[in-house]
Length: 396
Image 1 (cartoon, rainbow, N blue to C red):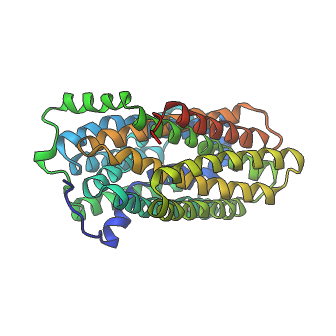
Image 2: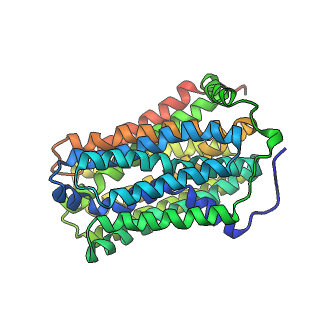
Image 3: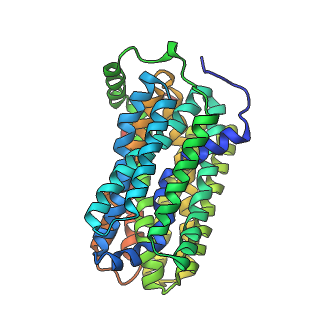
């Protein structure tokens, strides 16, 4: 039985949606600063992009620790501890002058931020199941989707008045606010009677999920789709600012336009799931992402047009929003007793795949958008193929 089934308050949805957005908060906010941070720290483009990779890997590995811990000890204590770690690391990053130390701190900052990602999904699963879970996940993802829209603009405004370090001052403040709000307003949603009896058992239960083909089909497909997302995240500032000579603030505006696709996609996922089912919505999104990949490669190769690139990226974000909402809902729906572990596995594979994808674009000596859009297409194809290869066949 779920802990509660009444309609959630807007405040709770806003808090959980913001907690789930530590990825955008940790990365999109300072994407416009990557070139200037690279110059200030006398770093290479690859090392600068490794600050993204370190954060992404921390976000993934942290979920593996925090998910089972929350299945054993409840949601509140691991969440507050993670938020505290995120806040402390943000403070330390402000004073860093060595890019290698900054990369290390970004890793631990990611571990702290992972608490918000993994436990927002776990709390949602504690409260809902089935179509209601998909609908609530769509709300959380829509709130989450606002941050990629506003974060680069905020980051660009900060860069106009101070250095990239000011962005991490803002992250410090955000961490403090979320920690206070969670401590004051977020109740425990996992009663003691539903918790794992032993911590070791909670980790074993999480590893058990690796044997579940249907669950892993959702996990792997979502993870490969994150490869497309992070190819875009890590390459967008260099392509738009470097290749197309887009000013920093204009980059933030274009990034915000692209981010609107996430809100459209999550809303569409909720509507399609209610009408046709969550699984058909996921399959439609996987095919759509491949189609967008084809569009991006063909248009970049033939015309190299900024307008056509932006059109394709908006569509890509929409299909990614659909995949994230539906795959998360399907993966979490059957794992009420292992919600923390299931959420951790979804987060781990997605973030690690994003961490792998991020520096790959930087390895190419790009003079156009082809390395970025080429990798978007490759990961999209792998997402589609992996689902159909791993998922057990259903009887007609």
